[in-house]
Image 1 (cartoon, rainbow, N blue to C red):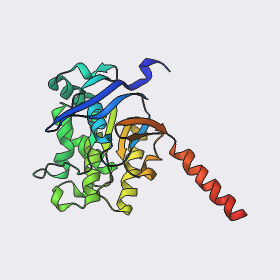
Image 2: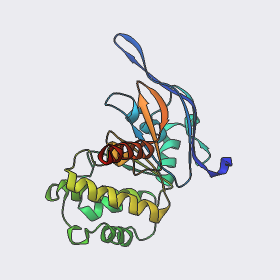
Image 3: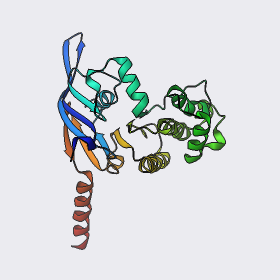
Length: 245
């Protein structure tokens, strides 16, 4: 596999914060790569460091030490202005709490990243992607007039409007019921396949994680590869063998 095929490269990434009780290490040295077009889930218990890692990968926070390259660009050596430019050019982000602008309509929320990026016809782009997520009839509605599932669909449309090379999602179904969670998962993976975007999501839901091509488990600031599909297959095989006996 060549370096050019890697969308994300990390080397010995650490994160430390200063507290009233001294320095706290949130992430131990982490190294892994993600190939362009791959879908990867970072799983783990609350407080394990997975959202911290996602924020570092997306350039929302700075590493304490180590290196992160996004599409070959050295994120770890950039200042905030440079990281913001890179996010605008190549990154989409979906939050658990939707993070929609309450004073803007669904259409305006989706248009916003395209306007900031200076793309042509942001309104037309936004209308098209709202149709893709099934919300063209809700375009003029404000977030407080939308259900949780509808708000997350608007957030997904907003994340995809700039055709990002990399999409980060932090607990994208965490605030939804099971019915809406399934709909959002299907939509997210369908759009991801159509756009050939590299997807990295954080979740505590093993079922959602198993839909990704790779799973990385975070435990107490350390990361290791895990194969949930293999584990799931082994469990089903064991259950079937028990039933047959």
